[in-house]
Structure formats: C-alpha cells, structure tokens
Image 1 (tube, rainbow, N blue to C red):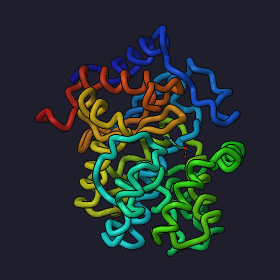
Image 2: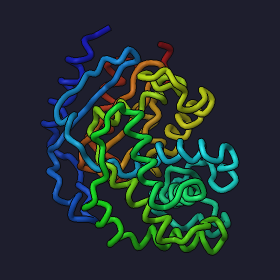
Image 3: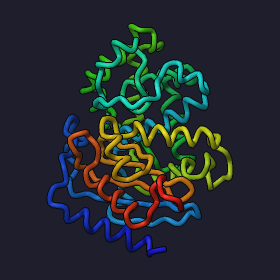
Image 4: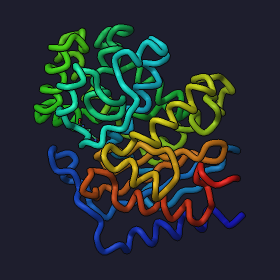
Length: 310
Ligand code: GLN
C-alpha cells in the first residue's frame, strides 16, 4: 500500500494551490469571516492510525454533518418507528427546500435535508428535555471521538437563530401537518445548536469510526449501533448526504459522505477508514468544493470506494 501519510499531505498541498476554491457561506458573520484558503484532512484507519495534513486540528462549524449524529441518536431513541415520519429517498432539491413537503404531507424526503433533520430534532425532544438534548448530543459526539474538548460555538448558534427564517418556515409547515410535535422554538433551538458544534477534522474522523467499524466504537469495543443500522446510515449518506449534489458526490468518490455548509465532509470507507476534510469554499450546491476534490483524489490513490473490491 502506498504511503498514506504522503498521499494525504500531497492532496493538502494540491488543494492549497487550487485557483478557484468556491464561495464561503456568508449567511452568518461567524462563517463569512472564515478564510477561504483553509484546508484540513484527517483519515483515521481501522487500526487507529491517523494520517492528517493542513488544518486538521482546527475546529470548524460542522453544520449539517451533525445530522448523522442526530439521526443515530434518534434511531437509538425510537428505533425504526422514525421512518414513519422521515423518508429515505434523495430529494434532488436544495438542502433547505420546502417544495416537496406540500405534496408529501409534511414528511421530509430524508433525514439529511433540513426538513428531515428538524423532524429528527423533534423526535429527540420526545426523549430528552430541551435543556438536556444538546448536552446529550455533545456527550454523544465526545464519547464517539474520545475527546471531551468538543464544544458548541455559541456565536454560530446565535447567528443560526437570528437568520433561520427558512428553517422556521419548514418547522411551522411540518407542524401544520402534525409532523412536528413540540414547540417550534424548542425544536429549532436544538437544531441550531447541533449545527453549531465545532469540531476539527481529526475529531470528526474519530467520531465517524463507528460507521467504518460495523457500528462499534473502537475505543471501547462497545456497540454504538447494530451493524445493520451502520450499513443503513452509510447507505443514506451515499444517496442523500450531499442534497442535490449527492449523485455527483457518489459518482466522483464512491463513498458515503455527509457535507456541511461550513465546508466539512465526513466520508466513510467501510472497514478501512473514517475520513474528514474541511475546505470552507463551497460549490453551487453548497458542498465543499476542494473537500470533494480531495476525497476524489484520495479514492483515486487508494481504491477505497465502496464499489471496488478491497
Ligand atoms: N445551519 C444550516 C441551515 O440550517 C445548515 C445547512 C447545511 O449545512 N447545509 O441552513
């Protein structure tokens, strides 16, 4: 096998030199102020080795990547009953689209678009008090990453709250169909705070290990989810993790992945590695431009796609 450390470092160097790095999200000041030339990458292998490069230890706003952890917790809380309230189909629409909710009676297409994640937050509030819920999520990602220093960026959370009109519209619209059951402010309070989790590539790749390892946390050997559930979450990441850019991401990388508007992507090579990249410049679908290219390069160099025999 090629020298993975060198591969990751070469990719970081190539990404730093990219002339067009996309457009940094600017809907809140806390994101608009991030330098577009940031780039970090970390790959944690099945044996625990971590290969990293660039800004791999700099925390950034994980935004929609948190939808993977929230879904995992909500499935733990209510099991497959969750699928009565959230679908499992790619939407082919923007991350914050409302259009399909009308014909589909308030049932969002999948848990990785905003509408779906807002229902997942509502489901979590059936299990935890609003005050406890974000603390529980923090405890969950800290345990997955084996790192108690992970925090919520309150500046980002405040910005989300102040500008979240579309998310409020989505939540209110779904409430009208009975698919949001707690007060909208409480549901969104949780959603905005989970979006504001700040994690580095290394922390994120560590937190994603259970999806590489048949549902087990390699630190403790304990089951986070069953192997079947890990497989299903990976399947949803592959088909829905990049909104209306999901087909393109799967085509280019062949890996399950979840993006966030902060420029992060968590990608899983089952049995092999959990990988996180961060490059804040986005493409026209709101997914990290250099992050996607970096993962494409990694798969070209390693053959880690789920569609290539190991
Ligand atoms: N906080 C963002 C929103 O709800 C998250 C979206 C994203 O990462 N794509 O609009």
